[in-house]
Amino acid sequence: MNSLTPLDGPTVVIELANSRFLVDPTFDPAGAYPIGSRELVKITGSTWTPEQVGTVDAVLLSHDQHPDNLDRGGRSFLERAPLTITTREGAGRLGGTALGLDPWSAHQVRGVTVTAVPALHGTEGADAVLGPVTGFVLSAEGAPSIYVSGDNASLRLVGEIATHFPRLDVAVLFAGGAKSPSVEGYITLSNEAAIEAAGILGHPKVLAVHTDGWAHFTQSWRSLREAFAAAGLADLLLARVPGQEVPI
Image (tube, rainbow, N blue to C red; front, top):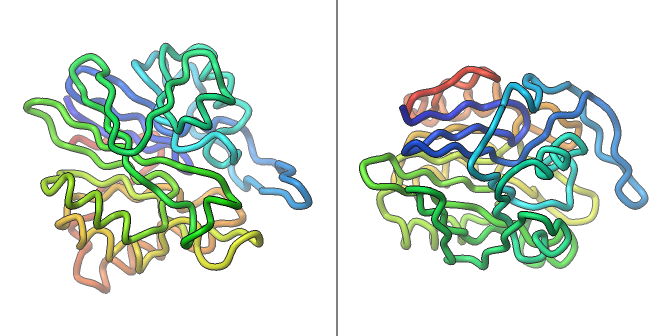
């Protein structure tokens, strides 16, 4: 069965065409993470342990430089993972089984084609401050195609992805309207931008993640659900209960 199992923050288990993936592993309890002169604060613990996730064929890591996408428990998970697909810069830092892909490059994981797609962690120029990030498109014969946005806030890039992949079935959108004092504006999709992104992508089913659990998220799953309903798009949203499998 093809399915998504959202966990916490950006972390999702994807089962597709008999392959198993884990997106942006985070497993730590609540706590603070110093980053330079500031800190990121995790306000809720994790739903699953690494042992509950079990084995995967690959980890899809949008980026390694921020603990809300890769925390201490997530790094330990990578040490046991057979493959981690991420940015070239991230793969250089992580070493081990990490594979860095440039945008539009692809790698086969059993029967699934994993294509790295561009992402921008904020407004234009934010990558110079916050570092590079990547998204992914997963496709396999006879299975739904899945877009994983990563920490992308650029609707321009969503448009490029829609041009390359005009028939996406599911979009895993990192939302939450995250903000950083280092750059202006949102560094992930706001509720409004997530709605617009869904339209650009041709209104696939949407699993919204990265909306709760961290203090720098300015919006929530509840507010996103209300925004989609107000836009007449409530039926696009897949149910999201941490740890509960969603067939696709």
